[in-house]
Amino acid sequence: MSFIGLLITASFLGVLIVAGLHILPLYLDDMKMTTIFRALEKEGNGQMSRSEIVKFIQARMDINEIDDKIVLEGVLVEPTPGNGKRVVFEYEARAPLLGNLDAVATFRHEVIIR
Image (cartoon, rainbow, N blue to C red; front, side, top):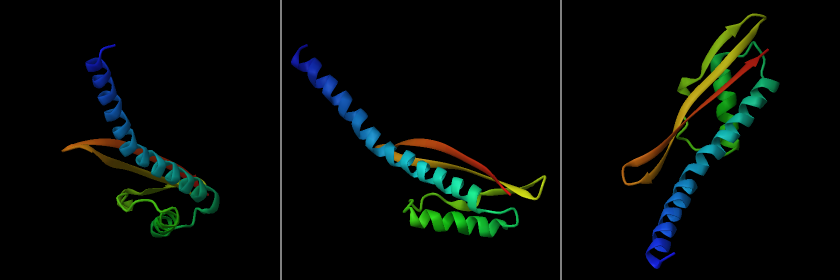
């Protein structure tokens, strides 16, 4: 491999590494959100109101130091048969890559609390 080929390969790998370093926190935050929703499923009850569910999630987000870019306005709470509630939360997370180029990841969490 010539020096130019080595330089091109190294720059391509460098771009991939930098992109990965920007995107990795999005997935780490989502792993924390998965833990929060598992806790909601275990500790929550079907009598909780939407505001109580949002407060529960927000408190856990504060404890886990999840970025404030995740807005909980999109939390959907629906009644289920048997006195339970289905909680669905879909959100997008963005990571700046280069200039005006962003990486966008969409995540969805759904649990049923009884």
